[in-house]
Image (cartoon, rainbow, N blue to C red):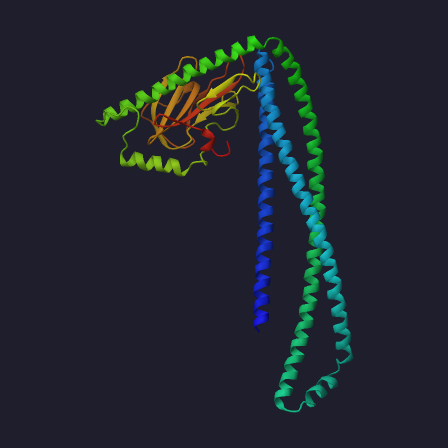
Length: 407
């Protein structure tokens, strides 16, 4: 009895471990497929933006930056697709082995069942069963023999059911195996096309880079000048934040200039903002991040570093900036070299939407998550529609990628 109980517990543990493994593999498959679709959409978006800008008089530097971004996204897509193909290879191998085991088990079950049927047939007559019972030495032995006969009949039925179940499982595994092989073939074919496009883009980039290398000093000067413009815009933004904090605190009777004095309601709003870290919606309906937060080498002239206090997002012409969380518009300002900026306060957290050509809100307006704040400006020289998006806690810069969902 104890051995049977132990066997049941052991079976349950093995079942749970196998189930956990299957769930983990399923989760990995779904995550990779989701990432692959996102990368394909991102590449499509980059292609669309590049196509819409082809008629624009764009600098060689801008063209190389676009190609560099597309190459990075394409390389990521190839990497994810390879991971999917490798995962499928492992699953195909595991299913092939499982099918082999099931076939052996099924054959054994059928042999056992055949022997059982043969034995049953030899002693199936009613007279034999009656004689088996009547030959009992006492009532207790007769009862036990009757119970044995019932158990034997039930066992035969269970064996038949198990054969049916194993047969159906084998059929399903064969179907799954065929689907997995087909999916893998599709991924391999897709990867082949993606690699061809990647080589084409790299060749175009190399041709443009030759032009840049011959004039590297000139392009380096352009990059430094662009960084100086960015620094001036960032300085204006930080000045706007500091003045907004000072103005808000002055209204509440505080002399603090770098940290918001919070009411209980503002503290609750800030806490809600933090709870949604990593899950906030994008500040545009659709877009591609073209410049990330922090200091990094320039994608073209590697000897020069560029710095960004937020992120730059290229979106569709006429694209709208949207509030990423509930809050109050604390400032709307025109920034020199960056069109208009809207600053939304969420307690002591701040989101800034810069480079807007039109603004739909005013200072003091209460806005909700997803509400349109303004239309993003399109550059006349590059043809790009780019939102400069920033997140601060008081005067502390934050990386938007840590806050926005899958940025």
